[in-house]
Image (cartoon, rainbow, N blue to C red; front, side, top):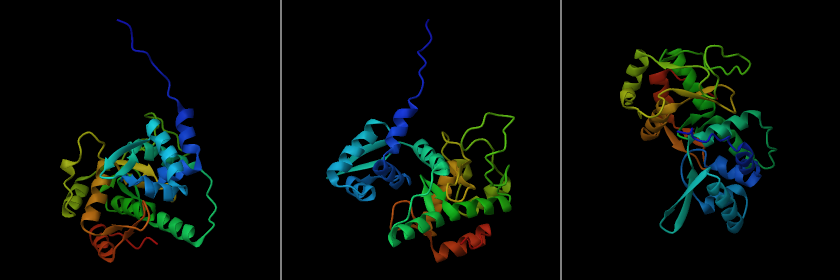
Length: 252
């Protein structure tokens, strides 16, 4: 019996899809995992409806984005968290975009302060949460600092997996007090992963636990969606609740 044909991945094609500035802005707008209409994405991309349709068709054809119909609207979302991981990895080495207006400056500051990274929290808030979890020994295994120059000797390095964080018994109890059952996280997904935060250059919590924590904070109204895609804000109740439960200090 012959072996299945092995193929190489077409990195150039994927890179070309991301390389266009309009498509890059659309992909970044979708990076919180939610579906957005073509109209919203046209505005985010800074183009008209017809041009946006062409770009979105290319992203769908390239497998980076999926489309679904909701009533009279066509809504688009990223095809999965791997697309966000690729965007975040590129953001670590990308030069900063020039800021040309007060609106852009305000949005940039808001994204740095607190945002979603697919289905978990990132930015200063996400990094502060990760530090709090480590300081309270809810997670152990590493210190949350990104050190790209350190060699990995005992296992192959890969993005988000080159160091291992583990949930402790203390962590299980503390998460339970927040209303998160760590024994009922999605079984097909790693419970504890991290992302290298592109704006803070430190780790924030991803994986099933990161998603569960973000969802719970939204349910409690401790964080709310902001006025722009990906932007979130910590409420007064959230600041007090996270200080009480996790010892989270002011992070700005």
